[in-house]
Length: 377
Image (cartoon, rainbow, N blue to C red; front, side, top):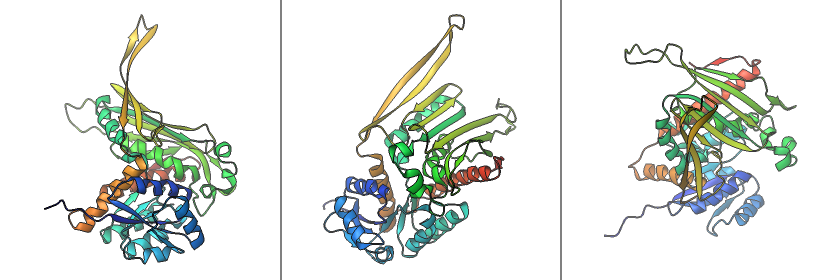
């Protein structure tokens, strides 16, 4: 007998946002396990133009409303790139129609709405996955293995910034990411999400005990954050283990910065007791085909402390498809398994999203409270 070929997951897209162009390409590159099945917009003409401009197959369905797409029983899952302020409404509607959901970040404007979304999906056996693409690059798994050689992690630093007004004239006045009510978390939600996720990833998704925004936030006339930084602290408790050499109150610290005003940077550094790992393009690789990072070790002083030594190992990881296509593949794999009855919802993705959202909201709350420290312990 020949090999059984499982039917492709039929994926529809709700909205014609610019990021949907990237994900449309990703679906087409992801392989036979997923089909770019449908696109919907509030305007049929706009949906038709989007499908044509982005190489949709001639068989793709084109709808002039989001509800029409959700009413299509053939659609297995939806990608939702709508403004964050619309996520709750359309995630709940999609879940009610039995659709699995790949949701653009940030997932929500607050923790409570995200809880509602997760509960709606889990109650119906549906997968919810955030669109954090770099999580699915093979480099990310390779880096995580190298983290184990760094000793006790003491500090993580992450930065994501770009000069919006230079790269995209008019962005700071017209883009939805600076509009209250649509994406009022601004830079914190759009690019700070990546930094927070990188920090949690490096620390095995342990929530920090304390979160404090630094007093440098830039907020526009609509009250939207366009730049901010924050510090997080993990306080290690003495485990009453005679072999444990850690002192009561010893801490791990992380800082991040995100900005729509500064030079483009996408950097993460993880520093341990015996080494460090550095990546200069963690969120979006310089190349579609491969990505690199550095592992630093064997540092020490020399020549009466006049100089010091450091070993640096460059690691290059090739990838078969771009990271966004790898994300679509992983999402489709989970959905396909659930459809066939042999798989289950992977709640780990829900947990990662909720923890990222919790830290993000703590930073926002700290800014709103005059940069007071927010406790998450």
